[in-house]
Structures are given as structure tokens and as C-alpha cells.
Length: 606
Ligand SMILES: *[C@@H]1O[C@H](CO)[C@@H](O)[C@H](O)[C@H]1NC(C)=O
Ligand SMILES: *[C@@H]1O[C@H](CO)[C@@H](O)[C@H](O)[C@H]1NC(C)=O
Ligand SMILES: *[C@@H]1O[C@H](CO)[C@@H](O)[C@H](O)[C@H]1NC(C)=O
Image (cartoon, rainbow, N blue to C red; front, side, top):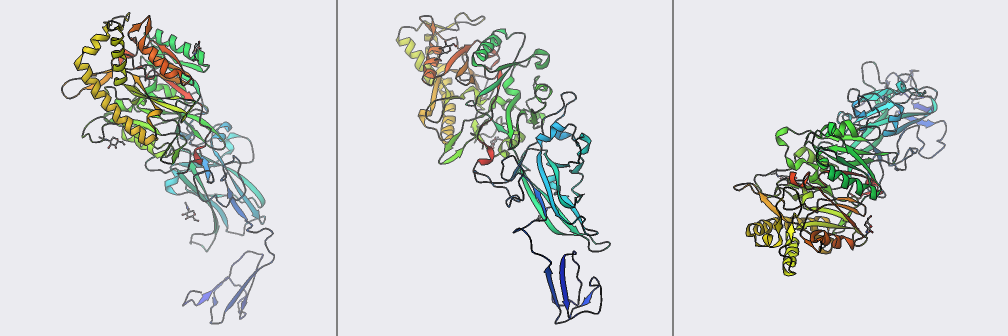
């Protein structure tokens, strides 16, 4: 007893035995007994537990990540990354079970369809004890104020009707009593994730269950037993070019028949699906790459694709929500102030590398790549902070910032891409290279093809000879500058992705500068071949309309010979009038939904 205590009382459940000595005069030990120097309280149980560490109350989750809720996992109270890690997983319920009047399910405070339950994580309350709790005792479930923004808990009643999933916990109700079933009972709860990890949310959520003991009228009950479980919300995961394509998305416009025809051929040959977004929906905005990025979320019990909607908000703005959001197709966006949004917020400026290992650290889901202003620049365009914060907070594909503000449009897909390869690291990084371009043109000149023409036969385009290009000093100076910008990125990519020169292939591409005074920025001089669509072994490449030798385009020939060794097949797509002249190419005008990684994000060592 604390020093100075003068009285004590005894209170316990029926099967606890005790004795007090010296034997007090009072019969009720609930009223205060005088505490003398030689008071002894002896406590014993009527029988021993049948199992070691037998738990009478247990809140259970799938802490071992096998898709099944186990019994009282000793690790359920904490969360650990890695192949030997543990801790339950939650999905953000960002798809929509409804196809009419849809909203992401997480915005609805009730379960509207039983099919929605599979997007939630099962949590089981197991109790084993007397038929009833002693008078005044109760079970309550609770969450913290902070976690309540990110999670909801529903309870299952014993019937199959949708209305029988009452809400237990939410941002409005942080604590609620749950019924005690008596005897050996199991009660199912469904836990729903509401938001993705972000700057102010690390993705972890804990839920407590306590047995409360009454003290006396007017005094709050005290917990005499608490069980706790922890969940982590699945990050949003991007899919690199090396993953199998499932669906290709393009826009149909009044002027892109030629391009669509090329894409249809490519997709048919490849065997994936083509999805065309028609004009009533795209309203003339053809930049399918820029409005959205496909990714997915994953858990041991379920996974589904999730589209990240860019704050670019062009005329295609409604497409991700109105068309893509649906049952098992999630939607997430980040809202930025209009004046903070620039061309660098288009998702041609958001890519992801294939899996890499860098100085012994592995990134089994690759690394996100974005383009920003030059690090030492005092002004310049950047990807908006809310999107950058979101990308960094996902953690499993730690981003790398590249320098893309030197480009007029400013997207990293204008100078780089990845293609699958059967050897080395399983891929090659392709980089646009003016130096490689000039090498081809000099070679043509030396072989007597100085008068061969670029853009020959292209409507409304003046042909330019190889010698014209070689003698244009301004163009050469501009391309030296462009090469230095790409070289800077090449060094960053080599060190941040752990690449050697042999992992990189330089593609012959020239640029030119647009603008005035000290605001010059680069655009592709002829269709930018690196801005391609990658569908397994099939590459859809902007048709460069280069100088012809014996009837064959020298740039196409070079491209094919560079890719052939990797077992890749080049299809050249005419995007000249409908994309190239509008400062984009095949990649900018398309998007690919890919198969998720086999590798599970929670197995990453972080
Ligand atoms: C849950 O229980 C743990 C330990 O029992 C406690 O530290 C934490 O504050 C509790 N959280 C809530 C929301 O009650
Ligand atoms: C642009 O974003 C990068 C990457 O997050 C950051 O390091 C840099 O400070 C930002 N630059 C400006 C000018 O805001
Ligand atoms: C590329 O595709 C074409 C047309 O489908 C086919 O004829 C050719 O053999 C393929 N080449 C390679 C290297 O796979």
C-alpha cells in the first residue's frame, strides 16, 4: 500500500478467492477497512488456466499477412517492414461500388453494398468468459482523434442485410461500447482505410479494445485490460514499363485518325486492350499521359488499381473520376492552388524506374522519378508541393528529382524512358542524345548522303537536308546545351538508380530552343523517339521522318538496330501533325495500365 494509506477495500470477480487478516469486523470488504501495520491480503484463483497465456479477450487481425485473421498473434500490436515483418494491412476504400452517382466509398459513412466489405480488413473480437460481465463492467473499442481521420470501423450483426453493419468508430465517435457475447464468442468488425499516407500521416493506425471496470458513481471507469492492434495503410504504387501491359488508353480527336490507326495496330499485335476516350469526354484534350497516373494498392486479402488524378486539370479532367472510378477501380487526387500548378504537374513528368539496387540498398518496386527546376535555380517551375509530398509519403518507391525545367513542356518523358531487357538488370534506360543524333548526321554526310532530306513528304513541313542540319551553327550550340542538361540527369540517374554506362542507350534525337531573351527552353526538332509507348517487347515509337538512305529512314534504322539486340520490336507511329507539332508525342498521348508487381510492398526492408 502507498505510504500513509489508512484504509483499503477489496473487489473482485466471483472465482477469485481471497482472505484478509487480521479478520476484519466488517462483512463487506467493499467498504474501507482500516489498514494496520500487519494487514495481510491473500489472493488465489479457484483453478489454474488451461493454456499458457490464456487470453479471455482478444482483438484479432491478420498480423502475419496471409489473408486470414489468426488468433491472438503476439505481434499484432506493432508493425514491422520486411520479409520477416508483421502487422496488419488496410486499403484506402477509394473505389466506388456504385456505377451511378458515384463517389469513392470512403466518402460514404455507411456500407451500401456487401461487396464493399472486401475492400476492408477483417478484425475479430474473441471473448471467452462468464455468460455475463459483472455489473457495471463493459467492453469498449477506441481510437485516437488523429487516427479517426484515417479509419472507420463497422460491426457485423448476425444477418446478411446491408443495413446490419452499424458504424462503431469514426471521426465523430472515438469510443464506443461493444456488446459482450458471453461464453465463447466471436464478433466480426470491418476496418476501412480513408486516406493515403501523406506529409501529416505516416500510414499507421491503432485500435484499442478495453475492459472497463466501474469505480463508483460520477467517476470514470478505468481500463483493467486493453488489447491493441495496428494497421498500416497500403501505399499507392506505380508500375514501370517492364511490367505487363493490360490496357492502353488514348484519346480520339477530330484530327488524330492516323495516330489512332497506328496505336490500334500496335495494341492488336501486342494483345492487350485499347480503350479510346472519345471527344465528348476529352473535349479536345489529347494528352492522356498528363492527366493521370495509373497505380494500385495491395493487401494480403485484396488489391485493385487506383488512378492518381493530376492537378493539371485540363479538358480531360473528368475522365479519371467519371470513367475510371468504379467497382475495384480506385481514385485519388491532390488539390493544389491554381497558381501553384505548372506544366511540370502533368504526369508525363512522373515516371517510375524498374526495380534497382543502389549501393546494396534494394528498391524492389523501383524508384519514382519526377522533373523539377535545377536545384540551385532561384526561380523556375517545379512539381507542386502537394503532389511531391504525396509521392514521398508513399515511401516504397522513394522518389528521385530530375532536372526537367530546361524543356519547354518540362516533362521527363521527353528525354528518357525504360525498356525491358533480357540481360543485365532486366532493363535499359534510354536517353535522348543530341550527340548520338549528330553522329548519325555526320555519318550520312560522310557516306555521301548530305542531300538526303528530313521531313520529306510531310505535309506543311519544309524538308531540311542533312547538310543543312550540319551547317546550322545555332542548332549545334542549342544541342550542346541540351546535351549538357541531359548529361546532368544521366549522372543523377546513374547514382540514384545504381546504373552503369552499359545500362544506358543513347538515342539519336535533336532538340531546338524556343523562347526569347533569357527564357529559352527546348523542344524536339523532329519526332522525339524516346517518347514512346512500351508494351512488353513491342515499342510504339514516334515516326521521326528522318533522311532516307535507299528508301529507308536512317533514324528508324538506327533505332531498330539499337533495340533489336534486346529482342524488342519497333513500330513507328505517325504522330507528326496531331502530336509532335503540338509539342508532344506518342507517350504524351497515351497511358498504360499494367499488372501489379508480384513483389509485396510490405516485404520491403525500410
Ligand atoms: C491504446 O492503448 C495503448 C496501450 O494500452 C495506449 O498507450 C494508447 O494511448 C491507447 N490508445 C487509445 C486511442 O486509447
Ligand atoms: C523543387 O522540388 C525539389 C524536389 O522536391 C526541391 O528540392 C526544390 O527545393 C524545389 N524547388 C523550388 C524552386 O521550389
Ligand atoms: C516484329 O514484328 C513484326 C510484325 O509483327 C514481325 O514480322 C517481326 O518478325 C518482329 N521482329 C522481331 C525482331 O520480333
